[in-house]
Length: 334
Image (tube, rainbow, N blue to C red; front, side):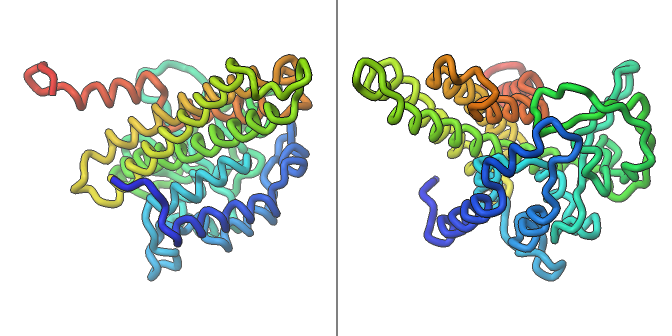
């Protein structure tokens, strides 16, 4: 499989990068830190107008009519821009929830706890920004009015740009789609979330490399020291491997004859989660003592990566899914 972008794909990525740079400069993104609302409605509509949420929607339904392959490129750039908000949920909801595809509404998504999970509360992200909350379970997809929910905000979420609320009870909601849609969303959501992770891994790498070039010690840039070189090189390799895994998974979804799309999606997210988290940690290390301060923004990518790693499959669940695909029914290796 050729992982080099063709000219149209490269231009698509560049266009989204320019959009993020204009609408989501870092200082504007950070302005929402710690608050209950982090979605910039004007920026959200700009993403919708650019087709970020309707890429995979058929043209006859008002979408762009592209595949998950192109969507993963767009979401990589959104991750690289640290764009906050329920990006994946709104993209999945295009064509199902009015206004999702053009960015005039913000759609959230939460998975209903399985039966027998006990009385644990349900955590909902971005509740104050949502126009619609979709609930995903094995029976399909249901819609809820966020304003009707009795929720408690959590004071100190892990990611300061992903505010969360706790729900003691999650209502049934109004059914809007069946189990086939739910299964597809679990697969596609994993790929798009993995693409966001690739963007975060790349952003962390860029930040670390830039700092290593600028910061001097003993009269020379710290990037000239072997230990720092190795950290940055490992980060670059990790991000590129994750990018290839995500692109391969996206192509497998678009072309089912290529392989098992669900397994490819699980594998891609495993690799991308690890790349984003490890690169975030390494970027903090390259920044030294300053890397642990709130003012230096590298912690934002690390924290976002930790949050995204809990969505559309945890490490244990994804690893189990991939491992199961490698075992024959008789219990031997494939």
